[in-house]
Image (cartoon, rainbow, N blue to C red; front, side, top):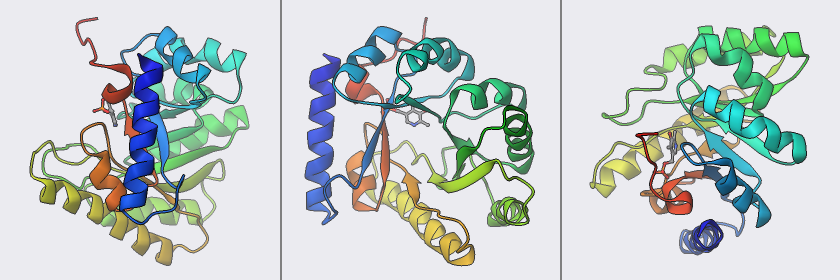
Length: 234
Ligand SMILES: *Cc1c(COP(=O)(O)O)cnc(C)c1O
């Protein structure tokens, strides 16, 4: 099932790129495997999917340590809100942390990466819709973090882009507005900080990735449409 679903989603992404006048292959797929077992991840890897997203560090660590040991082309993105005490494990296993939403978190990521002598890519999570609670709430806080990195205070951290979750609504215009807000912020910050390569726009999930691609997404994060419904009772 995973293989068929994955193929369907990938074809659909290519269709959306075409419709939106985007280049083929411009939008990457992050397969969100949270709450799904290693076997599902392995099935996806068998058909060439290498980038995965998880939102809980403990689960991600247990699932992906053995998988990455077997195949170092597999890469993991942490996409869930991250507590400071989980950062150590997160940077051990992940190559991207998409949910940086405060300076104190960035400081801890830098500290733990320095210890491991590892660099890591980060995206800044931005609050763009009324209903999502996570992400930077103000531009000042974001600018403070970017200034901090620019000043050379976090040399193990590579800022690469932005992530958002659209509000949970059927109102397509509201969803598009949320994605557009992220794109405009990215453009503004790229202009303000030419020393960084802020290329990534991580937006769009199973229910709204078509709209995200229209609004310029460079990576969609898709779980349910690939792996099926999550069983939260486990
Ligand atoms: C779970 C999750 C997704 C995937 O959601 P689906 O609706 O299952 O595609 C994407 N992004 C984040 C941050 C998530 O937590």
